[in-house]
Image (cartoon, rainbow, N blue to C red; front, side, top):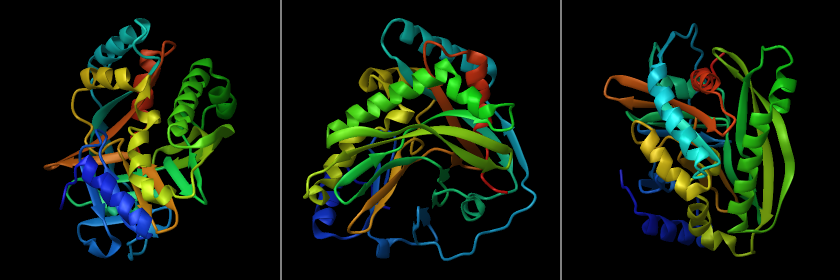
Amino acid sequence: MIVHSQQEAIKYMNNKGRAGKPFLFIINFGANIIHLYEPHEIDKTKLIYNLNGFTNNTCCRANIQPVEWQTEPIPFPVYEKAFNYVSNQIKAGNSYLLNLTFPTRITTNLTLESIFQAAKAPYKIWLKDEFVCFSPEIFVRIKDNCIRSFPMKGTIDASLPDAETQILSNKKEEAEHATIVDLIRNDLSRVASEVEVKRYRYLDRLITNRGELLQVSSEIEGKLPDNWKGSIGHILFELLPAGSISGAPKTKTLEIIEEAEIDSRGFYTGISGYFDGEQLDSTVLIRFIEQKGEQLLFRSGGGITAQSNVDKEYNELKQKVYVPIY
């Protein structure tokens, strides 16, 4: 499997875009490990994808019942130490919002490939012996000279009384979402004109093996020049990393993340996508299970602001450890 440098990737993407030739891309969180493929090059025994309908998967959806699922999250004191460090950085004015993430050990009767086949999610990707991702979150979509982003920020157990009202009226969640929308709007302005918020704080319902969740998203769009296909590489890397899984201001917040988290994220919270010759669709690599030897690690997290409560944030991290199999 060839790993490309950022400059190689930009050149590759721009050339394919200019020529109208399809390609698949997988980019890690640090944007320094990049896999690029033409569709005919992909070995389905090593990589399977279904990115909102762009797919090389020919198997029927697996029906796995019941799902065995045990989790071992990091101890609360470990999370609390990182949370306190981030909170102090926020109080010092070094960040306004930071997405803090950790791995949770999981034990399951499922393989990564069977999770790919059984999971219900708009974006799925399986890389043999490395990871499976079943993401609900769009990174960017580009079609007809229009670029759209759909940041997802805010999660609640849908079974709670008045869950919709709770999540939409929560001041901490509202401030966190507003910060991310402003960040994404600013990011899109780096590559597009006429950037505006088309929909603000709408709800998506996610069904999982552990119950239903509500997640809050917004839609932001801008206009690209007619020749955008020849600049696909420049556009994507100008927007990385995704604001919803890093924070604001982005550069300083990334430095804090590196200090606060216990290990490298790898491909978790990177992006993957597909260009079909005319349009591009992509996802943020969240809802992510990584394989390390015989161990499976489910990576999850949430946004920390000045209004965050450590107990609630720790519970959100655990709440997101699920598979959308039902």
